[in-house]
Length: 239
Image 1: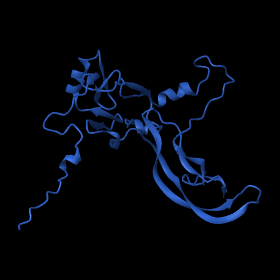
Image 2: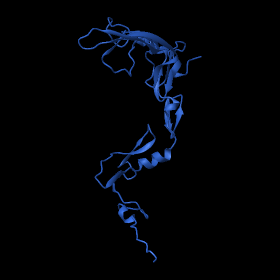
Image 3: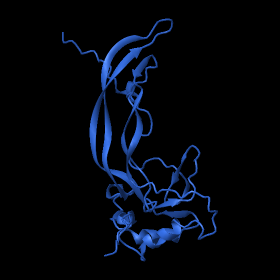
Image 4: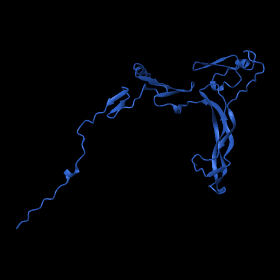
C-alpha cells in the first residue's frame, strides 16, 4: 500500500503516486528517476548527484561551559565536545528533524582560573550535563501546545487554525485601519501610534483618544493632613 502520510514519505515503498498536503504537491519515488538522471533536464554530465541528508543523529559540537558562567577569568577544559544531535532535511518546511528519545550525559571538566600576570591555576572540577539525542524523526514544527485559546490544532497540516471566523469577518470590514493576524487570530491596528501627554492609544478605534479623570466621588486633590490635626482646648477649672 502506498504511503499516504507526509512524515513517512522518506520510505521507498510507494511509486508512481502523488501526495498532497495543504495544497502542496509532493511527488513520491517515481520522481527519484528525475533526481538521479542529470541529463534529463539538460544538466552537464559532470555534475555531482547529491546524497539526500535524511533526518538522523549526527556528531554535533556542544559547549561544556555553563551558560550562567560569565566570569572571563574562568577557563573550562575542554571547552567543547561532540555528542549525537538530530539533523537533516524533511520533505516540507512544516516539518523539522526532532528527537524522539534523548539521554543526559554527565561530563567532568576541569575549571582553571587565570589572573593577569599569573599562570593558570587549578580551581576545581565540575560536572556539566549535556543532552544527547538517541533517535530522530521528522515532526511538525508547530505543535498543539503552540496554539492559543482562540485556535484548534490541525495535526495533518501541522498548524493552528482560528476558531473565531466572525471576528475575522468584522476585522476585514475595517481593513482601512485594521488587519487580521492569522497567527494570533486577533484583529490588530495597521499602525500603533505614540500618543501625546493626556491621551492614550485605543486599540478599538486605532487612534489616540483624550484621557478623562475617573468619574465618581473620588479624591482628586491632595489631602491636607494639617486640617485633621486637633488643637487642644484648655479645660475650665472649677473653683
